[in-house]
Length: 292
Ligand code: NAP
Image 1: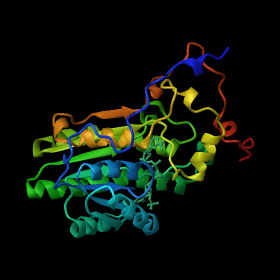
Image 2: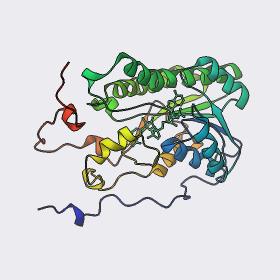
Image 3: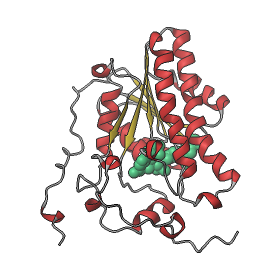
Image 4: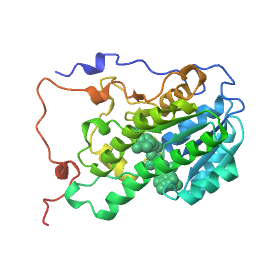
């Protein structure tokens, strides 16, 4: 008998627009969010804007950047849309030159699509690792070089994923890249702490949003009842990630560095007394047997 529907799960969050931080916490600050034109990046950017930050949202797609620029401008300060591929160090440098040195960098851009490892092409592997891991490093390196040269403090938040620790069957490229991103948080926090630069990680749980790719949405659609599959008995709201990001980069978290904060209602620690039967990744993705 299924009794979970009668259980409350974790309470719903406060409504969009609420904030734990004082109004104006980010007045006079510039915050750069990569991939800030879509999904979780846009939700993170919106929370910084509500608290007074000026924003730079940076990614490759000019069309959705422009749309997000308009939407985010209604939450507060100035919003600049910068077309930038995070794999391109010269372009990153141009964006910092043109937009100014941000006080906060949120490395949110990533690429991902499910594929059994035996079918993953070298190009697919390279593309995901280059965007997610190398792109994060290049953005952060340039941010730190400029702050070190200027003698100014800064804060970096790297958006990760819990399969950095557990492995991610069906997502070998992204899971390996996110493990690298997690490791960078710990290395760079120590290297740059003496210069006033904090580096933290932020890991979302399942937070569905309208910009999810068809591939990811297709994988989710194959499993019904996502709320009941989480210990919280609900999925997360993008604003819950935004609130965590604004806390981590705020003056109230100045002694928090090298830490990765997981916002997933304890889903990644979930274990069962008796494991369900193993279903091979090919079968989970609805693929035919591998024929070579
Ligand atoms: P998303 O909607 O697919 O957003 C990815 C963003 O990254 C897009 O704005 C994309 O813009 C940008 N991007 C991709 N390649 C880029 C490149 N080479 N240079 C610059 N920007 C690039 O993803 P999301 O679901 O919001 O996820 C955001 C972050 O949360 C990611 O780091 C993801 O791994 C992590 N995460 C999400 C979930 C979830 O439930 N949604 C769960 C765990 C972790 P362009 O295409 O215009 O470049």
